[in-house]
Image (tube, rainbow, N blue to C red; front, side):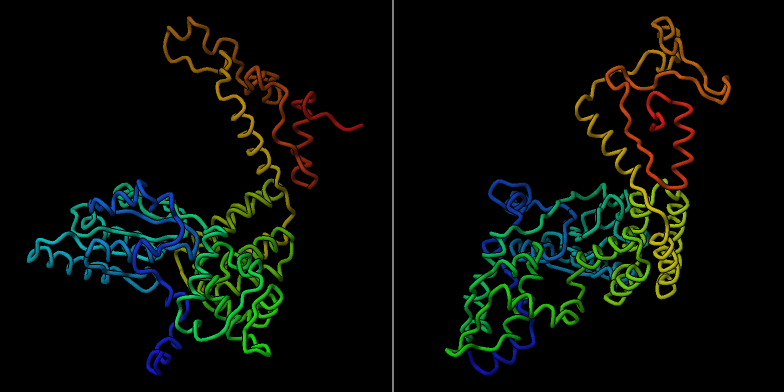
Length: 439
């Protein structure tokens, strides 16, 4: 390698240096790009339609879009939803439209990274061009597109789900980097143990290569000049370089996990700390607000139903005002949820009910619970025997509402807290055979 090469490589991160240029170098997602699979068939035939790649960070979404454009020799426009506005979208579409007027080539590809961050107006601006085929849209998102992409646009796109890379995939990438990267090749690197490398990467190729580069740069050569990488070296190095490692948001899932567990564990101080880490790292505030809604339902639940109302209001407020002001309602909600009594009874109840449904999906609805909008249905006994609860004392009857096969099953089990203690008293009065007082 000459000095010019060294200067070039020293400024380019390892994940970028190792980005594959074609499908033969692409690792993972065999369910999509393996021989005979749906996306591979689309590429091989050249019949490309708009689609969205949904998956966690570092699994090859951006790389795959680039490879497709290169393989099919299509013009490739890229936009980042973080920094692009409606004007940027319209400018790209106009360029694509002008190109089609003077060329018979296939429609260019418009790749939008983090498409879930586009607002409705930005997504609306894409609709006409996607529908007319002016551009082929490839969107990339770490969020469920059903929630983040407007229905008209989603209906015009296929959704392909990408998976976290498996250990075997990560080992291929690790070996390739050590053997083929010019910067690493000039050093004598010995990987004695790779368990910590693989574990810390969490199925994320970019994370793996970033960790490898950090460890190599931070590890002193041994007596023979070799850099030995083992589990202890990786763990020690990451602890010492955590601030650098977090700066680019690579620990997205680790930090959101710490945030969720802090709220669940009733520690408001840790909750706002981890929230601050996410905001400082450029995390989408709406992503945090969505997690607060989930926490309010899953972990606070019926112990304090107002928590879900506050979380929902927080989401709407954050969506309306944006950063930096959004940090304040986010903090208020996180502190409130962390300081609230906890119950996961609703979460457990629905999961147990879903499991029961999986056991028997055909249990018939009792005739007296069925609707009877026609005379024929009435003649067949539909709704016969139903008792309208409000006609009875206490607005309650002991009518059975479960199908016969499910009678006696109690999915909702009140947990010990002030709110659910009151619910339990009521249920014991209504259903003593199911919610009997302990002796």
